[in-house]
Length: 159
Image (tube, rainbow, N blue to C red; front, side, top):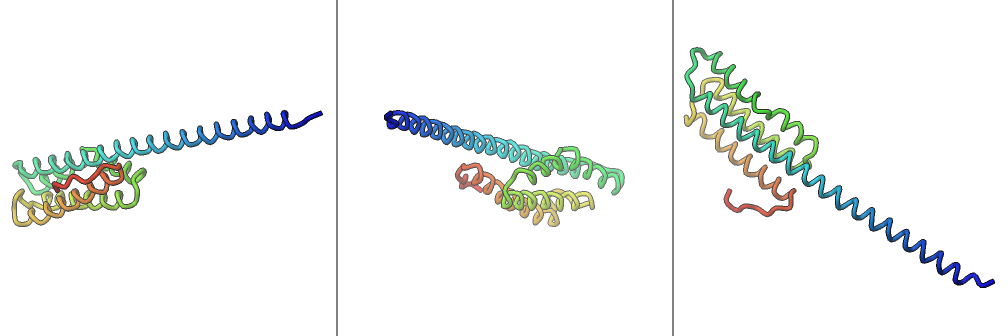
């Protein structure tokens, strides 16, 4: 009996099955990578939006009239908490790469320093406020740049 045709058929089948498995695995990896990118894009968007909302909220409260210093402090802190920034920050810590998390944390801390200054009575647009705002802008710009890089989007060139 001649075994060559049988061995050839068997070898062809093994090669075909192996090629299909490799192709399926590569497709799965691409889909997982694409999904992870979408998750990071969503988390980044939520975090940046929460930072912006918190900044606007605490600024609006700081511009308002308050009967007492403690009322202003409480209002500024509540405005900061109510934006969902803490939850968005935790999501960033869970899915972001280290350099994005570090930059996001610096942007978060820079906004918290502004919150603390407003809570202590600093006026919006004051000499005490200006360097804090500059730090926040710098931190936000760096963070956005790293996020864009991670997402495969080129730099804006306008910050």
